[in-house]
Length: 447
Image 1 (cartoon, rainbow, N blue to C red):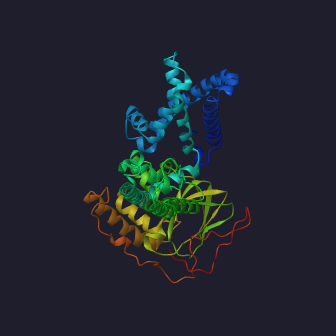
Image 2 (cartoon, rainbow, N blue to C red):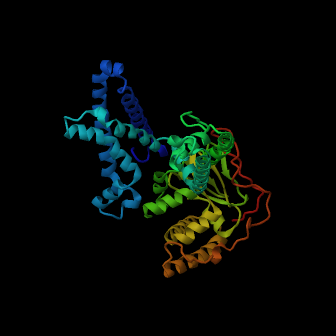
Image 3 (cartoon, helix red, strand yellow):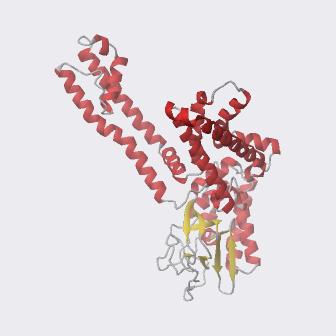
């Protein structure tokens, strides 16, 4: 309920909503307590609610730490080792900071909760766990960190040049304010940001000209990092119907034995896709360019002679990518479904860097073949070639993907496969809710 609620568990969603409500409530209380009139009238109620919230957050933190050894990346450790590693994660540190005011007030009765207002306000950051928008913003900032650092370096350089210029022009006229370059840097910063407090202003004609130029430069310079963040944030929002979280990836059996850092890297490769009941996800004969993992919901794979139901944790679309071929079946959603999409080139890289994952994919393919859900030519050709590549990687000890050459298995021309009608899996076709779409019967029976 605590870790997988965002992936669709009903009870987990309600737990998340209650926790988010308490987070917002305690932050609002911490702010209102600084108003003397409000504190005099409602101080006792606020203190009581703070105790209730503290107990709730403490119980949440203890529960999260207690079940840490059930997380797939931590299962290889002892219960104590898994819990210690979980406590080192950023989200766990934020949770600990959120309960520190309560713990300090509990063990130090003489201390006032109001003194700990800064720590209490850190609870706001707990919302990032429940807010896809905040996670998307953090991801956008992280992805553009190099561009942001470069823009900040440019801004600092302009501030330094502007401060030096005004120091040279007005150091004799205003020695108490502009007699040093550090003193002039305050004026440069206030002018570049177009705030203009007026506490320090140039009085000479050359100084006023320089001040005007710095003002004009400020509009463009500070628009640079804002534009970078806004563009990255918009791209992040439009590229995902929901946010692929660490917990979603860890919940896929295929990745359950990976380390936490490896799961985090895989999460960055995955793109989210939400589909409604009856919508076609892939069509038979369409060019295969991605693999799908089911985060929530269920899909049905429509083969020539049978239909296969896949649910949360299952995956499909892997064999067509391995051979650079076309889809052997149509897949549609049996209910509202959330998918994690792995593009072909990212799948190739993942299988090169993670031989164990590649082996699991191949084992699943062979199992599906034994069930009669895949054509024989796939098994005879792709599986044998893939097994050889994975075995070679395993013998070479390639676990991190360093120094690996491109395996022959993935030696596929871009857009490879038979000539088709141009359909791609990026387009999810609409179908009436609850209806099963017609599976094309005139397309070649190719992988």
